[in-house]
Length: 70
Image (cartoon, rainbow, N blue to C red; front, side, top):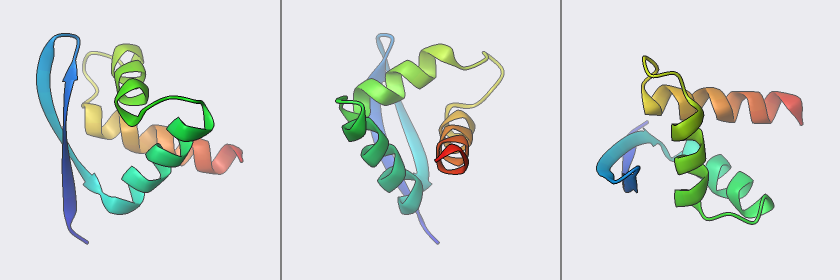
């Protein structure tokens, strides 16, 4: 599986995150279900993560938790 990179401006800084397409699909579906854009959801998750946790890891953990709580 190849990684798909998305670039965001988060907290005033430009960053890129590479995840498998399946993770982006679930993140987009979750954002839409909450009435958010993908950028807004990622920004919220970025703000809530521990400083020592990479953003890509935080997004993957969020997806796993989302899918296992459904």
